[in-house]
Image (cartoon, rainbow, N blue to C red; front, side, top):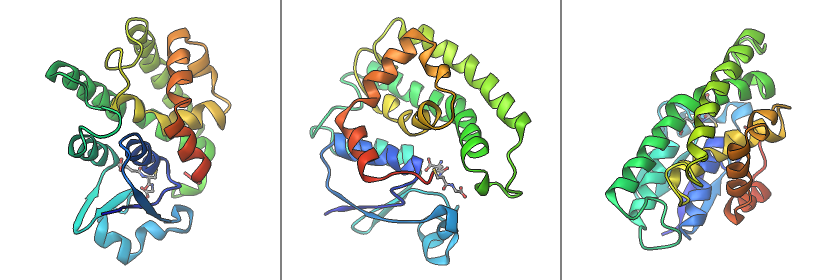
Length: 216
Ligand SMILES: N[C@@H](CCC(=O)N[C@@H](CS)C(=O)NCC(=O)O)C(=O)O
C-alpha cells in the first residue's frame, strides 16, 4: 500500500517525508496550497478537522500530527531502513525527550519567526509583529544554548545515533539558516553548527528539498 501524504510543500509535511524516505517507505503526495487556504476546504477538514498540514492516508487508516505520523512509521517499519527509535528503551526515552523538546521548546519560537519574518500572509492581519520576532529570537537563543551544551556531549540530540528527534528539527531550522538571515543562531554555536551540517546533508533531506520547495 502506498502512503498518501497531503501537503508536501509545507514544512511540517517535510518532517514526515524525511522519515518515510529514511524508512524506505513508498509514498505519493497530494498538494495542498496553504497560501490559497486549501487546508480549510470542507473535504480536507474531513481528514484533518483542525485544518493543519500534514495528514497521511494508508489504505483505510488516516493519521495527522507530523510527529505522531513519524512515530507511527518508525515503529511500524522498525526493521526496515534506518533505525530511528533507538536500540534500547533508554535510547527510546531520550528520543522521546528530545522530540518533546523540539515540539514544546524549539518549534513555537521557530514557527513564530518563520511566519512573521517569511510568511506574514498567513497572519490574520497580514502584518509581521517586530515584538513577536524579537521575543521569539530571544527564546530560541536560550533553547539553542542548551542544545549547544547537549551537542558538546553527543553527536546527535538523543545520543551518538541519528533519530526522529533530529529529523523533527529539519524543516524549520532550514528556514532559519537559509531564508531568514538568522543563520548566526546556528552557525555561531560550534556544536549546533556541526550537528546541523551533518543532519542537513543527509540524502533524505536533500531529496525532500529537491522535490518539494516551500511555500511553508
Ligand atoms: N502540530 C501540527 C502542526 C502543523 C502545522 O503547523 N502545519 C502548518 C504548515 S507547516 C499549517 O498547516 N499551517 C496553516 C494553519 O495552521 O492554518 C503538525 O505537526 O502536524
